[in-house]
Amino acid sequence: MTNKILKIFSALLLSVWLVGMYRAKFGQDTLAQAAPDVIVLGTDAEHPPYSFMENGQVVGFDVDLFSAVATRIGKKRIVKKLSPDQLMPQLSDEMVHAIAQETVTELDGKAFLVSHPYLEQNAQHFFVLSRNNEAFLALLNNALDEIKEDGTLVALQKKWNLIS
Image (cartoon, rainbow, N blue to C red; front, side, top):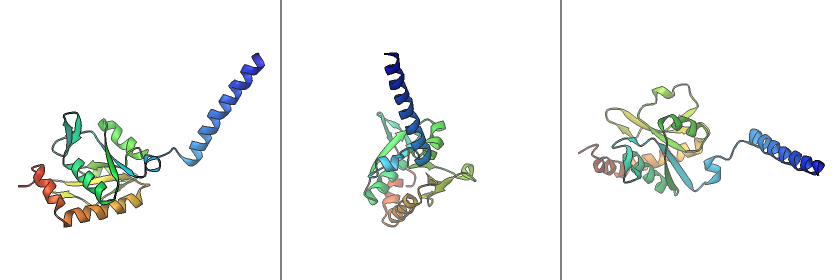
């Protein structure tokens, strides 16, 4: 009986070790790999009118803009509310595709990609992506350019009282 328990325990340990080795070699499944038809915006939802909580939902200009980007590139979007200290780690681990950032000076020298600026009023606003998302950055920048050209950006700015 003891020998049987020892064999089961050894097999379980070996399985856990093999999974760990696989993840160490090939990396954990990123959100992009797990759900390629969905893009995820991470936000702390503490910056009205850009992102904030209303009736239990994250809303705001950045959320609407990210939704417009998702529509342009044929993806569904999810907004994930995170604490401020979770934003960069979740982005680094690719558990969110992007975060909205008012300034990128704090990102200098770090492994992140930065979109074209989408607002340039009092401060520039950008979407920030992990270093491994060059293809998504190209899609996002193309969508932002289209949104600027067709008037969607101005309409969203008016909706959220960023311009009159």
